[in-house]
Length: 408
Ligand SMILES: Cc1cc2nc3c(=O)[nH]c(=O)nc-3n(C[C@H](O)[C@H](O)[C@H](O)COP(=O)(O)OP(=O)(O)OC[C@H]3O[C@@H](n4cnc5c(N)ncnc54)[C@H](O)[C@@H]3O)c2cc1C
Image (cartoon, rainbow, N blue to C red; front, side):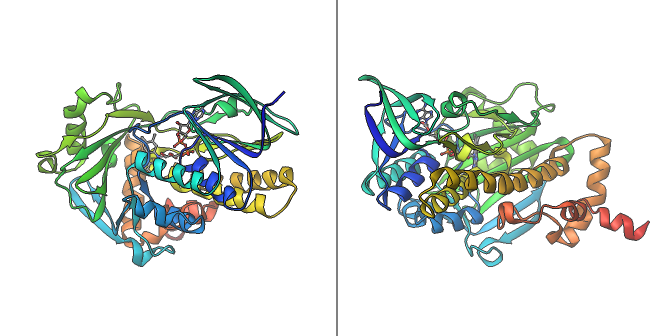
């Protein structure tokens, strides 16, 4: 027998859970958000949101909250081939959002949005973990806190507790996973010497490496190093390996003198780059959003934006009808479409920019000159995300296979 009843119980108070909780509570829906942590600390998570994610943030009314909590809008997206500058994109001028990349400190963002969910009327339980779920017409969530265990029922349960979702496992969803191709190591730096009006993306495809620097404002920078799993037997993880991390970024193309005065402001941690996802993330009163539904390869920095797309689509489906079973199925169908599109184009980019060996080199020798001449051949994952063309014609265009046809 359950001890409490809500319209919605949301497991996880990260970007997805907190934003959905706020959006639904604002509409008078009785909402419970359960968050395991009491205080958020740096776990090396997404901090750079593409302009298409900013569009979603605006639609959800949280862009102001993000900016109030110190988000830093970065105008330029600067790419380098090795150490050589390749191009510099003016994001507000060239994206439908008319926005730069919105960069923020992840724990600060989480605290702000969870507080906002509470202020909107959601009940927020911090320091409480979801330990199981019983799917059905009136699904039940099992909780554990310092006060013991508890059961709560709802019209709908939302799993928003990230890539290791307990709700997903407990409700019997089947997790699909790409083979491991990339690994991403990240760290928070203070006092890095990089200009803070641009995201700096150093690409070194011939050795299967990339280095990204996201300015967070106030002289803080989130740095990532991306490499193929075959390039490095051991991922760079643990603060004692910071020298190795900096050497790898410099070898990729970043200037060594940028790191001269930099200090560590958080852990150095590495994560697998492979996507993991669920097809049709709804069944029997349990719906998944954010990384619980699909954790996209962090190398392409779309997870935050995808999470907000999920929240906006699910919110609109739920507010559109009293039949929440039908609403959640409608969300899950849309999720398959837009996540599928993003997954496809990220795969193309990974193949072009991180595969190594003679076949990959030959592919780049053919494709890169065409992309340099006509940048619109590439998928626009910053401006359009999953709405960028991703059909067979777009794939052929990206890999310049249409050129082959003309010149053959
Ligand atoms: C190394 C790395 C770099 C990344 N870089 C980028 C980037 O640059 N740009 C980008 O857009 N995305 C990036 N991402 C992805 C981005 O961080 C995620 O997509 C996003 O955080 C997902 O949000 P979420 O709310 O779904 O899950 P999470 O952020 O994982 O939040 C889940 C919440 O649930 C809580 N929780 C977990 N288990 C339980 C439980 N049993 N009970 C209750 N609460 C629980 C957690 O404490 C947490 O607060 C990166 C990810 C990684 C790993």
